[in-house]
Length: 383
Image (cartoon, rainbow, N blue to C red; front, side):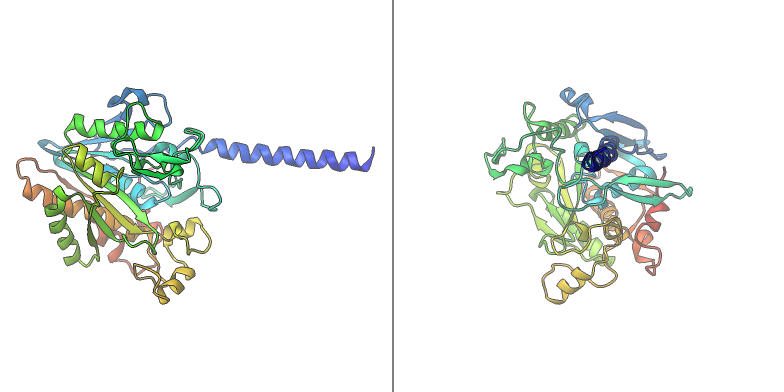
């Protein structure tokens, strides 16, 4: 046989093998890890129970409900708004797997934008997953996803995205960013319908307090901060002071009235809930980073950011220790603890009281650094 034909057949065979392996790997991303409920979860429903148009779509997502023995207020925790910001997703999981609610009810969405967990941002070299050893010694794999809805679920992007409620015009890619879509639209695209479903949940359940958990690159000015709607500034001020008194450096930022589509603005304007958005420092998101890897997402250790800090380019201190996943998850959970306490003190007729939430001290502050980068998180995870 002609050598050219043999070479061609070999190359074709290799191409088919590569296509099969990569295709299988890509298809596997569509199946997300199930989150095992902790003892405090009393019910699990779907977001489509609040907006039926989401049923059987990639946007439908579990809602974990944690009801206390005594009546009270209601709060909502949104994790996984941006799945490439892993501390928000993990904080939501740790809350629902460990907390028990004494008064009131807590609703938790660990997969807020479920579709965005099924792919990675193109050309970023992001890891597909993060791995932990649980407290029972089992390996647990969680997904590291994208900032935006999967384009196979919503396509094409327009040249310009127009926010339906306000008419604000943004880059076309923002059409798949759920945190530019609130209060959503019943007849909108998938991302807008998921946002609309979350608003319907808030209205139907009369949610008093909402937490949206995020991360930002170290060179972003709103970092290690809480952003509050104006109607929540009294609660936010008390909670922020408590966090600072306990040694957590955190800023308080007012929600800009002219920046539309975000939870801290639209949920405050369109519902009765008091919304807070929290940001922590995630090097794996930034533009100055080195290799984007699972290690970077978990440890936050990056020589490029240490150098950038020495040049004064960052809005957060950065040294060789980095900003570990334990620190970032601890900040989120301690924030939920302190802001909920401040809310319950100011609204004693509708308190939300819970216990057994891993604290900043337990997750990070009491460590010598040898067990950071995932191990301490694993002690609070259930497979």
